[in-house]
Length: 337
View 1: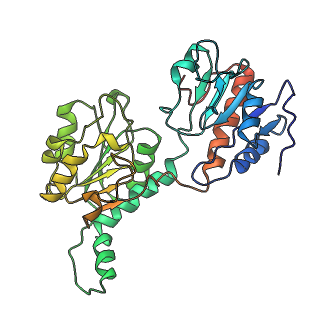
View 2 (view 1 turned 180 degrees about the horizontal axis):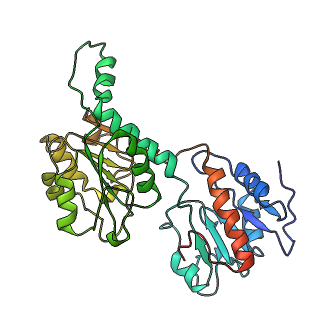
View 3 (view 1 turned 45 degrees about the vertical axis):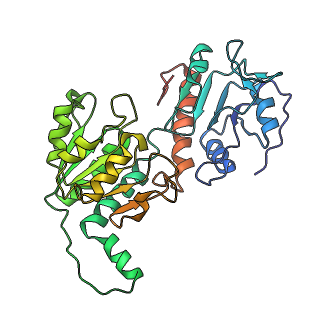
């Protein structure tokens, strides 16, 4: 469906910016919102020019980020001679779970609410994690490499049953991973900022050094699903890898800088840990000459665990609910600003 847009209208309704995500067209997102909000106008901007024109009057906008040349007010410098000022903007629904790419101070100063896509990734990323754990348990990565060489040679496999899995971060993704691990009869340790809140894992501990190191020392699989913060940046350093047992596997689907890449390389080279599944790296993209590509016990996916054909459907559920809450002045879901 193609929108016929009158950019002079005083009320363009809910504006969807034409910013693709994971190769999914924004047209599908707009249609998902229309299905959920049949009584509201949902306008998809077709060009960057239309995006800027619509933002001059829009009250609710959803997309990855504001287009170039759009200001949120007199205190927001966009380094453009003739910026479009989004005077009416009250709610920005970010299509990513992370909002670090946004100029958050400008949104706060302009008193514009910002929500994120937290919750969209539970099923897909948790399946990615389970796939990685099973791959290392049954050594599928070795079978793959030997198959490439047409090499018929047995290898030692493991059982996931009876293992301990440490999950750092008990947000939507950490919760989903825990739920999917239940049938495998493993022991789970959850690490969260507020352990007093409890959680679905068998144990819940804090991010204090002593608690984290104790959990790492007891875990065959370590899943990093926590946000990048001052507390977690470089959390997996040489001491952390020294603490982990040699049969441990690191799985990072969070952010690359949580892991000290040089320390990880040394840990792999010296067999301090059994391997790693990395969906994120530091740096990212990982250069083709980087040594991590050369280890057969390191599986690398290009920040791909968040890909799912259900992305727009799940995001539209969140944004449509927030539109209804916005209309009734109720607290917004996933509000970050």
